[in-house]
Figure 1: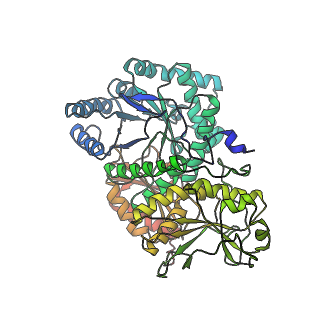
Figure 2: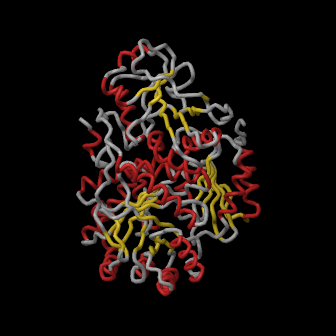
Figure 3: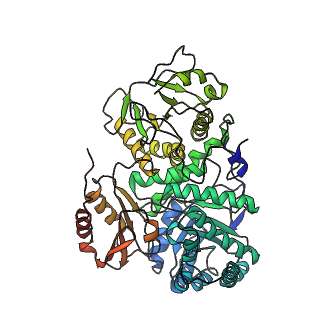
Length: 589
């Protein structure tokens, strides 16, 4: 009995099947149902700069963006979006615009008359952050529900009249005090934040809804979207899902982190629209998102993998597969390792270099203690290698896939070994035909990220003849860090910026990475503003957050240690704080 599949966060764990959601229209464009997965981005301009915002929107559209989102702090910005929409239509562009609203219901109501969709954040839309805290909130659940209904009633009326869609956008970094008091910043809390708004919308008879539920932590993001999907399936109304990893960063780190989180969900058939959030020009996000969607769609023709007992699989909470550590330091509580297949022996970032894959265990007369052996899912489910596995004490298994769906096949392999009581470490073999490191990074992250997010593998063996061996090994390490499986270097959690950002975040991120990128295992959050800042960098060691024009606040964890200092002195001050804390430790080169 496949317990998890029957719980139903996705149609199948053993073959690709896209989740059928309700279909809505955004400005005449279908989303959800059998419509293509839509690609979107968000402007970084000041929304009141109508000409500049229109120009940036055109660049996003020309790059292939199908939806453009703009920050909408107040009614002035809402009216400006209307002017941006007019300018785009005058130039022949009909791409739907989305007003991104956080605290201001009036801004949402104004924008809903002018653009095709409005995004609201349940964590702060009804103003509860100003009215309640965990000690003072005395409302019953019914009273709270009634408050949300009344807050949403004007917006719903306007959206019905104007055929405007709404996205419920839950962010890990901005949950309400009420939700935090009941659940903490957990996947359950994020889903509850969403469903209490769904209840209100459904009571008001409004279902032109899409949902996003995001985090900068890939593990939290994946587990929460799965839990949300399972919840929606049980409710019987499966709304279109928008996928994204917030504050993913820039360059290789941002692409790998986004591909790992989004790809883990796309591969299970979830997602109707995506945004790859990079601290780069917004039009740079579009080709990455398109490549990711197109790559994952290849799974439509992949055959199903054999069904195994997945009752030990834990999709909503992290649970590493139980293995025994062997003499090479693989398995057990050890962080996952990277093997690279190469004859050059220059893969400095690899833990192990091998010239070829190990021999198949199937057909061997006797498995040696401590050896390395290739196994397949077919070997395991057929029972061909079970006697050998019992004798192969201290061995390392290399899981080789055959179906064209590495995530599903290696997931099944890991769980089949667990069901058989086998505690030998499992290293996933990733064989790639990629001709560039960028291509390898995106595809490997999409295929393998979910496995490390779930704790199912003890390592990865990369065979990519078309890519420099050291680049392949470095990409593997970045993937493990993106999946929260191993920390070898500084992690930068940086937002892409938007109209609320009052400093050059791209330039600042590059400068901070240059100065702090050599530290071992620190997490640094770099945020354009405070809207999601503290929450999205909740597990960061230090934070650098925009506090006004030319002003920066510095954080140690969630505690502000320097408030609204001049940006010119912020980086030097942050470096000194790290040194004073005794955490300036450079990584081993």
